Structure formats: C-alpha cells, structure tokens
Amino acid sequence: MSQCKLNETHSKQLEAFLKYFRSGREGQIAEVISAFDEIRTIKLVEEMYSREEAEAIVDAAESEVKTKLEEELERLLCQIGLYLQEVYIQAEGHETTLNVSTNILENGDLISDMKNMRFDAIPKAPLKKKNLESLSSNKIDGKLITKVNTLEQEKLALQNRVKIISQQLRESKKAA
Image 1 (cartoon, one colour):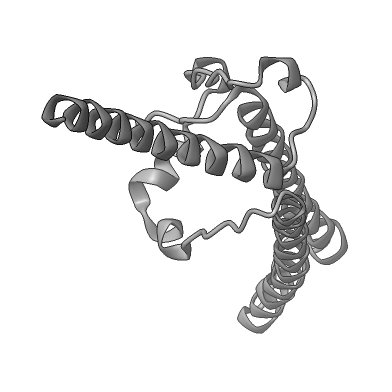
Image 2 (spheres, one colour):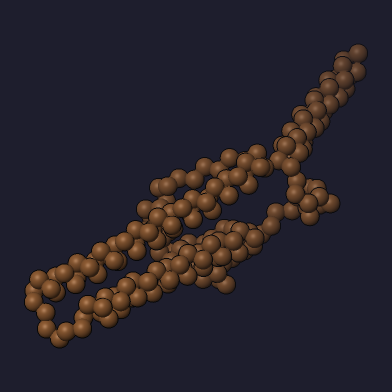
C-alpha cells in the first residue's frame, strides 16, 4: 500500500471525507434492499407467476433500483463537487492554485489503496518548521511568505556581492 503523505490536519479531513461517503454507500445499499423488500411485499403475493408477470416484476425492480442509483450518484457527484469547490476557494484565498489531474482516478492501485486505507495507520508527515516560529499559530498570508522568500534570496545575493567586493578590495590593496 502506498504511503499517504499528509499532515495530521489533512489526514483527519480525508478520513472524515471518506467516512462520510462510505456511510452514504451503506445508506444506498440499504435503499436498494428496501426497494426489493417493497417489491416483494407489494408484488409477490401469489405463489406462481407467468413468465410475463415475473418479467414485469423484475423490470419494476430494475426501474426502481436504476432510479434510486441515478439520484444517489447525481447527489454524490454534486457533494464531491461542492467539497472540491470549497478546497479550491480556500486555496485561492491563500493565492494558491491547485493542479489536480483526473488521471489518478483511473489508477486501480491507488483506488485499492484508498479503499483499504486505515486511518489509524496513516504515517503523519513531519511538520516543517518555519523560520517565523512566533507566527506559526496564526495563518500567514501567502504574499508575506512570498515576500520573505524574495528577501532571503536578495539577502544571499547581497552577501555574495559583499564577498566579491571585499575580495576585489583586498586584491587592489595588494597590487598598490
């Protein structure tokens, strides 16, 4: 099974997401069983049926299950869309664009891993320490992080420039 590289917060959110939809799956299975029970009670009151009557009963069951599955799958699609929309809105709020490929949705190994995932066994990705420890408890604006990174790069460039100028000054003193 592949390792899940999520921090603790994201692992818990993924667990809640999957539990929600797994419980929905159980509810849908109960709906299908209920549909067949209803057909049994309403239509199977006689002991013998002609072929046409039996086919009509099976057709009614097929229609009931198909209707319920179509409704549930459409609702499921909308719920997943809403969830992803919320994730994208939050990312955009932090000036981050997420690029997720739908190609992974056809990967049988990853699907199997997700199906068999045990959340108590998810290895927690180590939290990376930030240079701004005093701000770690607050949400840091994406622009601020970008600015800090830019300033760090500029600082390194200036330090290198000072080294070069110092070396040139020493060399010019030796030559004089």
